[in-house]
Image 1 (spheres, rainbow, N blue to C red):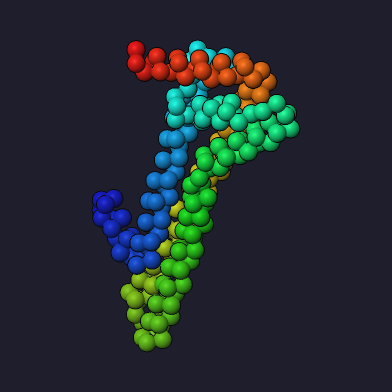
Image 2 (image 1 turned 135 degrees about the vertical axis):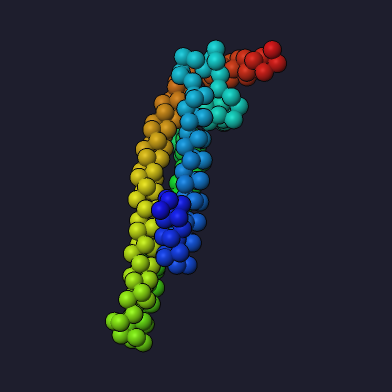
Length: 211
């Protein structure tokens, strides 16, 4: 028996509850892969503090956006600047964390859908027992198969989902530390120097585009 026919047999045995479990898994993994690609791109184009003047990040990158906003909004009051740093850092992290809560929700919903399939399969089994007794082995097997397969499907979606959420949260925590370090670096620059750094970086970026 080929793998394809075996999977089709599992699908038919799982009943209608297996459809939302499969869809949940597909959407969850699409979000996970999309988020991972975003992190890879951000990490790839991230610049060290020493490279910011000579090799600025692209305009869509978080370093460029944070530097632009901080230089524009900073003032001579250190307390206000620290509050601004915190607000900008939190906003950037919340933007990067968008979608992770949806992944966690889908991972949590999968075993509940599996439990629904378990209940549905057991109801089918007890209905057959009530009508035909224990003599209908095929009917009993179908109900039990539906209960077990949907439970298995829900766990197969949920377990990798929880692992992926944990991994993404660690990446976001690491990004938060790098954002705080970057903002601290910007705050330590004199106002004139920081604005010159911003201007020179934009000039360098435009030069790299046009030339």
